[in-house]
Image 1 (cartoon, protein in one colour):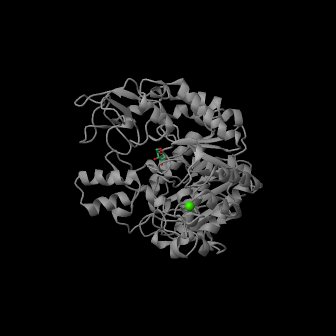
Image 2 (cartoon, protein in one colour):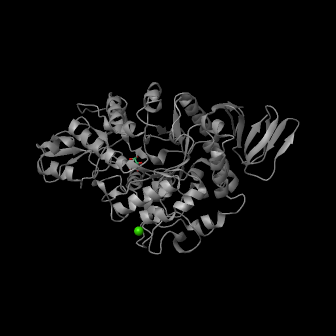
Length: 557
Ligand code: GLC
Ligand code: CA
């Protein structure tokens, strides 16, 4: 495998709206991010992905872009962005932006022009079809945020347009070469500024199965999951290859795709040497327990399911390329709440989960707040939730017959707002995130769970993450930690997740995924204990007694 400049780094996702508010309007901003660059350096991260800060009506929190070439004034100015890129560079941090090009905002000039003249060139930038009341829609696919993928084209009674997500997110027509050229031009404009690269949003959706057609309905609404269509749509590869060759590859830029449901045989094309992307997220663990009927039918994965999904992903990507490993992001509940059993959210359990994920082969991505073990909110009324996806899933649950209390309890576990509450900097009002009123309430646990309390405290979640990142950078172990193979160890032993990372050194990573102690036979002599999330280490007759939630990285002789 060819060596790349980003392989040995640790990446960190910032959700700008909720990270740090510098001007007191309750919305996090770029000046806030700039003010925390020293913090990010202290943590040790070297790639920072910013969720969208482009001009946007924020219908989907910036994933609905109305101008790709400007910064939304709520987030700051282009001068702030330039400063962030430059000051990041001074600290060895590459800034990566979100690339949202499956769709734009209905307030984007392209869409306005398409509405004004559907038969003109901008009409071809979207999927617009003739329609009249009573006529069947071109297809019965359900949009991700609920309801059909079709809405009336604003200003018209006889035309409709396609949106895979919200109606304020019209899909761009990638079949049109003129649209593709506009997209590549925009990407290169940003890369010319010195941007490190992009995280690529919802990219598998750019290829539609055409002509539009119906599939059997899978809910009472008469619609079908849009993924039914995606599984049959051929040819996304052609678009991705063209995009990579026209943009990222010319700059040696870093790119990480939000790719779902890829076919295993396509992996080399996606993340192999000269793949369309540098990397793609591993979502295998998060998909365990998902159910097409809606969030109210989802369940959390068990330790065994987590382990199986992670090992399987390692096997698929080994020798091919780098997956990006996460336990959470801005679309997920908090990893520690999702993957650890109820009532088991101690620092040990949190660091075990984080350590097991971080040490996998691939590129580790932390999501803001993960490094201090931020948790889901548990005490909100439905009125507190802001996310469109959550509000839709709440209605889905109600329509399925759940009581309001049950519906709330069901969607609260998976709500994207769990990840979007403000970063908990300290115990001062609003967790030090803003001097104003935060756009989304702070998690009420902030007085005990915050960075200030953990910084410098031995054994804290934060200090543990710093050790993990430092180990990845340590030249003595980097070759093994970054490039070593992952070889599962004692895979059948229940609630034990253990694996070797093996290259010039042989490391044994082990996590006891339960509160009870358990024994693990040692496969040889221990040369050094590189990481331990507890103070103790019990060895007896060639066996280790792992305490509840203990996590270890051992160098084997
Ligand atoms: C991606 C984003 C998500 C957004 C969606 C539509 O999944 O991560 O936040 O809602 O795409 O852009
Ligand atoms: Ca602000």
